[in-house]
Image (cartoon, rainbow, N blue to C red; front, top):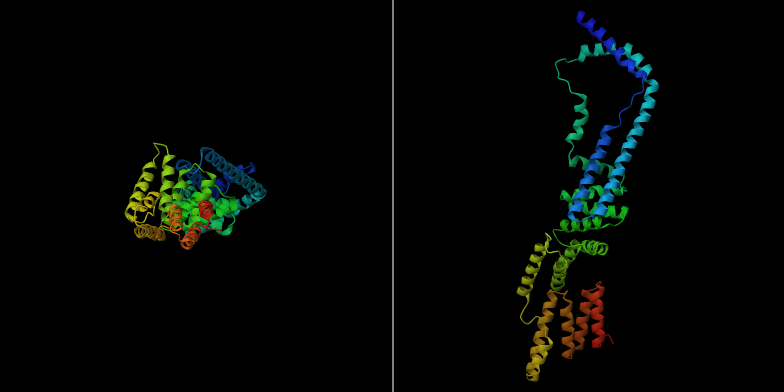
Length: 381
């Protein structure tokens, strides 16, 4: 019995000591969980900015601007949390004295009865600091991604949210989702080299390394915004290679290599592509598939008319056969069209011209060259 009397006395003494400081202003804690989650997302953004700068996707000036913007958001979040805490404090202080006066009477009686029924004094305690900090310390990137995804489901027009989660998707290998996120970020926030690069690369990876038409357009736009960047030029050369324009791809790789610093770390990769492409072209080219040159035709003049016609037609046929497989060889089409005109086969020349124009539809430079050739040979008249 003495034990319970002592408990009651100690409870009353503790309540008295606790209620005295309530007459002074106190600061209500901010929503620690939400603020910490926001800070974690911003911290990940800062890491991503630095990673993009190292990878060359952001210039130093762009990276600094991005870091300033993230810092601004952190300060804004802190001010918001502080304002929220102030409002909570003002509301709580009005009822604090009444609440604790009642508590001084009700809490001892209620807590004693509840403890007698449910108490377990043998259980170890858990410090408050551990309970507050544990969720943040244990949070993973996946946890943060889930939080951002929940927000984007509620606010799909949040461009910043898509901009934050897109590179995370890309690092996680979720390429289709990354491409969609980069696309939405570009639509809501505007195009930027980083977003175009992310969308193009994610689209390529989502299609097992194939540079699709959508990816090609993104890389072309990226190259327009940053013409000195090697990455979009590499992807565009690879696109030509995949389309069968081996000569165009080889030219793109060689120009890229010519502009590359001697000590750049990707130079060897481009050199390997050039070597592989050169080997491939030499293995697939047929002896008679190159088409007649001026020297070939001059040498044929020494043959009889029948032999000369047979030789030239054989070379022209080989060239036409090759162009069926490697259709994006502009120089090859030009040689074929000229050869048909030399042979007096103007209908075939016009037909080849039409096929070449269809092949290079949308390529203004190639179409201009074909149109000049057509005017020169009188094929459009």
